[in-house]
Amino acid sequence: TTAIDLVNMTLFFLVCLLDQQSWQTQIQGGSRQSPIDIRSSESVHDPQLTPLSISYDPSDCLQIWNNGYSFLVEFDDSKDNSVVSGGPLENHYKLKQFHFHWGAENNRGSEHTINSLVYPAELHLVHWNAEKFRTFDEAIFSENGLAVIGVFLKLGRKHDGLQKLVNALPAVKYKDSTVEFSNFDPSCMIPSCLDYWTYPGSLTTPPQTESVTWVIMKKPIEFGDDQLSAFRSLLFTPFGEKLENMVDNFRQQQPLMNRVVRATIL
Ligand SMILES: NS(=O)(=O)/N=C1/NCCS1
Ligand SMILES: [Zn+2]
Image: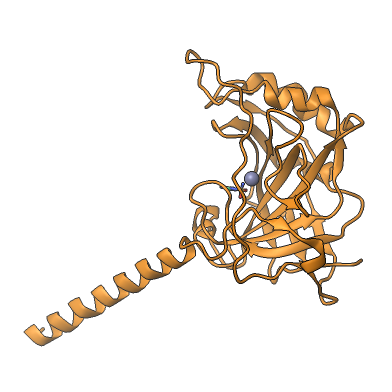
């Protein structure tokens, strides 16, 4: 290898490194951050948006984990049994986990809003593109890596399907606690009306990468005051430290910038 070859190889390596870093900056640069306020009158009806195909296997449900920001219900994503496809998605995406965001009081809690209307809580069902990427962690940092279904929760009748989850929450009161949790079908939290808005966005929690296709269900589901109180009884803090109730775990809204929110009318 001549000295010229070494210089060329070094230059090639540096160019690749800079390109990769500039791309990383782009996906975290802030041109498509979430959450947003969805202004229904400004959304565009797209007749090409097909219904979502959602299929979950309750036996994929593994555990609940208090990660110090929310509680995550985690799924076995080693098979292809719990997946979402269709709608705005070009591939099938595997369910990895779901979690919620909520407020200390009923006038706040959701991350997305509809014409500035806030809900007391919002469910996120997090899926990753298993056709294009090998792992969830790879997908988080990749274009079209994730699909998150957002479902608003409004206060009303007790949600019977949610109660099994609520009953398990005392076991994960403290940050970093986990509890085995099996045979739970998240389909019970999908509204019967499958109309949705969709837009390109980001994770709302770190690393806030711009890798998410958001699908926000138009209709909320209902749950009871006692169920929301159980969410609020969780703690941000680990056992033995000062008690800080896990509340107001939602991100401030982000500018829409150069994005269009598309809507179905099914
Ligand atoms: N709230 S969210 O779903 O956008 N944030 C996440 N962070 C890591 C996986 S999901
Ligand atoms: Zn979330």
